[in-house]
Length: 190
Image 1 (cartoon, rainbow, N blue to C red):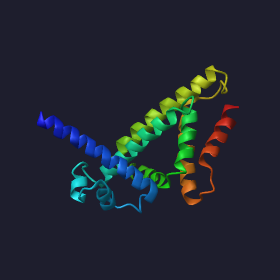
Image 2 (cartoon, rainbow, N blue to C red):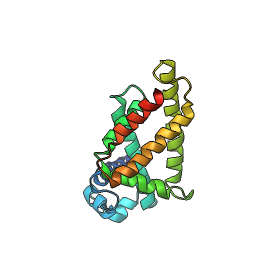
Image 3 (tube, rainbow, N blue to C red):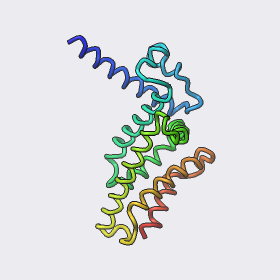
């Protein structure tokens, strides 16, 4: 019985670390956050923090996974489909510049197949492409999108634009990421 309690406590502590890290990275950014600061806010030593993760890169990847989970839950109540949800998340991203910075930094590093975030991004893109393509098909069936659109191609392009517009936004905060994505969809959907 003690093992189950210790296991549950370990899971709870890991979740606490991820919640705190998500908050700190959102406010302080990738370059402005030290793992020592995260450990301090959780109330553990740096080695204690790293006990729950294989490496700094594994922790950062877990933070992005937590961000995706939180974004999905947060957007779900306010939208009708994944295209609308994508726009809601892009709007939210302007409130969490540190997480956008973390996302872009890890996405670039994840091109290396041995990087801990590689599989996260690979599976994330597969899932997003599938879900967005399904949303395009649904809108086509409802007459809300042109019938001649290739849903799979549109999904890839929307993801590419979203990632690209985030890069532009990190350099020029006057860029309205959500508006640009909405306007592109409106132009495509006809």
